[in-house]
Image (cartoon, rainbow over all chains, first blue to last red; front, side, top):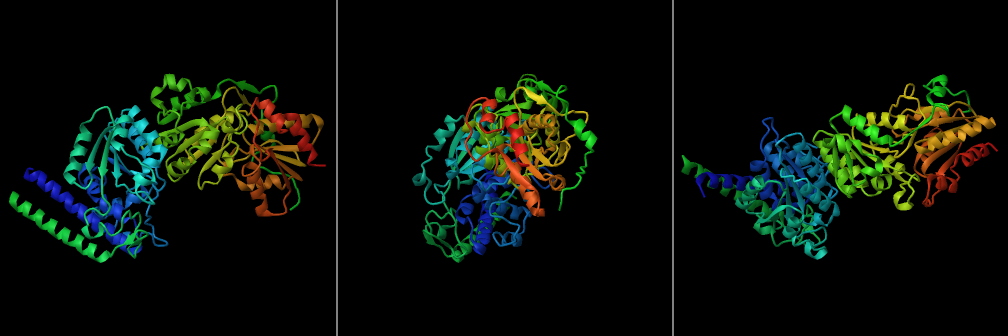
Length: 295
Length: 332
């Protein structure tokens, strides 16, 4: 790895760690989709801080549609780092009267769609990609959905559409965390083999470790080079990946209450909070060392 | 409040003038083919969309002559509306077309979530609505107006003829958010004079003036109401006709003024008698209280049979002579 690419990866690891901190900070207040947010921070950091091109006006040239309302906590976590939301605002998420919704409504700062009804975002993202191409724009459209969302038939309608119209500016990321609302996706209703299914539906598909930033970056690079097909990145993630002490505390934690509880167990927020703060410190030191090495 | 002289924002003389005479009325073949083609030629941001039913809703010329303004999604109504909402977010004005039964039942969530919560214009047209499909229940969407009327901020339009349909579609293209319209396919009557009829969102249109019985209708049922009215005119039964193409947001004051100027109100709709036009008028009149009796005529909480529209109308007593009799009877 060159020093430049090492620095790029380290920078993103640090951004991902800060996003994890923001996710935990928000969820400690009134509960939230903490496990998914922590697990998706690596993918989210790559989307917001590497892949999407800035538009020069404080936002992005490319468009990110998060179809899975539960996962929008990573949008908030990233936008806190961008200064679009303050943590004070985000800590009100879920409070009566708060403008910050767990699943935001279209028009909320930084959100393309209303995403709480699973399966409805992929068609919209495909429509945006189709429309942008129609206008002659080179904007790329990234759509994030979850493995459980593959249960919804409408996503397969959207996949067919994207492949039929050869939307090579369209990339779907499937958060493959084997987690549904009430248990493992594989036990609720099996969705594997996802990669083969996506290929059969006309996508260029690749399965990666969704918690390995170099793999995510490599998949995005490949997606940009694929012609005549939409791209599917199947990102295998693990609930709470990146915060060791949380990982085995609550199996299949779809939602974690402010008290750290879900019906399969509970966690103490404090040890994980300390762990993520020390991870940030370590990554900042490592990044500084890389900077010094370069100079 | 007692019945008094009915004053409408529309002058009585022009009201009479708005409805073409029996002799002037025409039947326009494949009306939507021309309406859609004319619209797309005027506006290159409009995209006509189909879920493999383009030929069944008279979409021909746009598909052949303006292919860049036509998008086919296959038999997938959820994706139809989802992709349309995406196109709207990319700066286009999408118009989805399918049968009313599918538009309302198969992609209601997409209409509400993807279009209804957006400020971008998204238009869904439900063709062969109500009992105007020859195939039975699965093709007959007789609940759509009620369903869509319940969606906050949605716009719901049920035009009666070619003139109304074309003008309303133009207005829909300038209306933010979800617009659900009922469409007419095949040979469609031209009953309103385009010189005197100007569609405005929410406005109600008196087609015949009179007192005693007030007949309120929308969509196909406004054609039926005119048929019945033609009979009542010959019989000398005092009545008036009000066409209400905008189910939501309707000008409630105009509905109140009309209803309280009559002794009896009859609503006629190509829809279940619950939740649609009759429901709407009843809700509005109830808010004032002590209004006239309202008799709701339409599909009476039952499944319609299949067959020709003539057969189905007769089955429910919605043919011209039966309607004329039912209207007259409310005074007895």
